[in-house]
Amino acid sequence: MRRTIFDETHESYRQMLRDFIAKEVVPVYPEWEEVGHPPRDFYRRLGEIGVLGVQVPEEYGGGGSDSFKWAAVTMEETNRAGVTFGNYSAHTNLILPYLMRGNDVQKKRWLPGFASGEIMTAIAMTEPGTGSDLANISTRAVLSGDGSHYVLNGAKTFITGGVLADLVLVVARTSPYDPADRRGGLSILAVESNSDGFSVGKMLKKVGLKTSDTAELSFQDVKVPVENLLGNEGDGFSMLMQNLAQERLTIALGTISTAEAAIRFTQQYVEERQVFGKPVAAFQNTKFVLAECSTEVVAARVFADRCLQAHDDGELSVADAARAKLLCTEVAGRVIDKCVQLHGGYGYVWEYPIARQYADIRVSRIYGGTSEVMKSIIAKDMGL
Image (cartoon, rainbow, N blue to C red; front, side):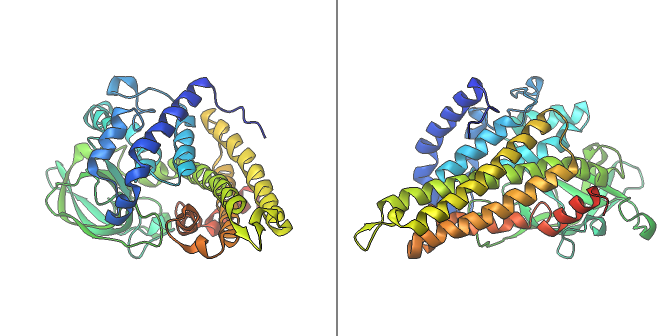
């Protein structure tokens, strides 16, 4: 189905990315997988070509766009090549909205480096005993007697980009837990990684997403200047909720473009692979399976594109973002599983992109809110 969501400038950007990925990412990607992340200078390179700062205001060194379509193109092109830009997506698509809610002084401090890649970021929500239930966060930040700083104590886990991050947005409890208002008392503090008492634990060995460093973080009496408080004290939960729609749209767009790439990889494979004297593509079962995959992916793509446009128009609801995430992640999981089957044994060999996609896609139904959480949001929107 012909897409009308992008214009000529997006397509020029797409071609630039496609050339960049072919020349500077694909040849070294296996090395990144071995190390667990791209080299730190790679993010500065992304800053040089304008990828990190597309939506950063021009006065802070960015491109000044208010459209999320550039991010969509970036995800489509990395997935098309079977690679990632490390923690690009968390940095630009998840964390930038929080920094944009900062005051002018904070924006001047952090956004130029954010756009150039000199400052890489992470957001620390999840704790060892707290997953989807963010209201149960126990990391504490206590205001000092003179009101000049917070003293931060606690631990976080599953933090995307935690190893290389220079600035970590930490969700912490700044007032005592109140059972009558579980969501109250949470705030977001921007913590510099070179702060005394801040430490990065082990880098977690994951099943997939091998170029995305995921770490455990700990904070022991870390002094955080009050100037590093984002928004107002106690606004943390509402800020998280306001940004979750974009996070879930990001996951939806990323997974459906991964599924599109999986179909393309698989079609190429079955057209070349010979079994019983003819291409695997010649068998009716192969044709039917790929036809099913194509139909599901095209339908999900239409909805994802509609949600992308709604987001640009300021009209994407929390419930529709949940629908997009639920639909696209579930479709991608089914489609990639079928594509692995069509590859046979080679679908389970790491050097084939479908194997990496198989490993990567599973977590999409967990992070950003599980599929079960998405269903609860949708049911509530239905009045159930």
